[in-house]
Length: 143
Ligand code: UDP
Image 1 (cartoon, protein in one colour):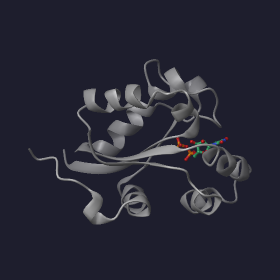
Image 2 (cartoon, rainbow, N blue to C red; image 1 turned 60 degrees about the horizontal axis):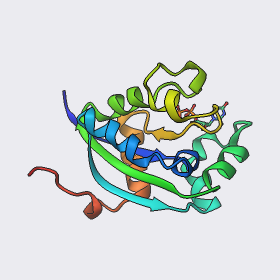
Image 3 (cartoon, rainbow, N blue to C red; image 1 turned 90 degrees about the horizontal axis):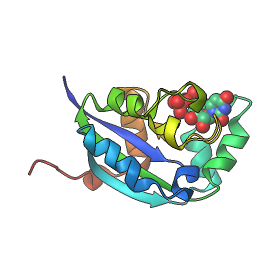
Image 4 (spheres, rainbow, N blue to C red; image 1 turned 180 degrees about the horizontal axis):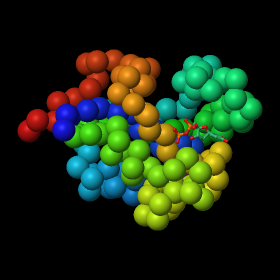
């Protein structure tokens, strides 16, 4: 299996619940390493740009408003099969459908406020990493 990198975002609802550490702990227990991280208050323009793929969807405006309702914690996760592993840890988009023990099952309240974002493929991961971080901001975790 290849070592990959992926973007994880802890969304404003989960930051407000003060569970950043609990979520980080799940990444670490699954063998994912954080190689970059930053807390950001997104602007409306940034949130619209990040979710541009959804701009025709009926939930777009509410999603953007939610994503700027408070700071988000953005991190690059690295590890074997990181994209799929992070998606597995997150659980289904709707927390009602999320498997027990997943982040969304444990911390999300609704499909709109669902605690975390994770890149859904290798190409998306590369684009999303470049959206938030310069290449030199990604650290080597080889020690
Ligand atoms: N979303 C929403 N209502 C919906 C579907 C999605 O508010 O009916 C939001 C939700 O925050 C979700 C995001 O839009 O996480 C992106 O949707 P996607 O289908 O890509 O789900 P994800 O990849 O986040 O599981």
